[in-house]
Image (tube, helix red, strand yellow):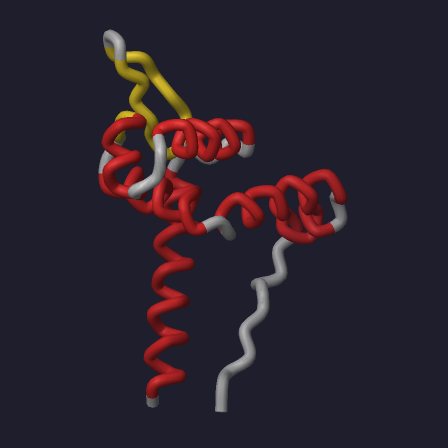
Length: 117
């Protein structure tokens, strides 16, 4: 039997849950994470910063497709870009994004192991 898990009561979290704008922004983040290519991009960026061409090779999609997905991820505040000469290098926006990715992957792996038992 699975154990029940809840968010620890916290005034800050409670205030977030009462703010429709914050809830909307959070749903936009999770929407961005729900796309396979965007998830691959973010996973690759968890390892290190990458150029568009490096991400294209990792994700096996066109440069145009990578650029489109990166624009969406940038708009959602999940990645940022910096210019190095003629290349644009992308990185995760902050440690929160790395945490979301790690927790999502851990949860998926645990779910698969429980289902396989």
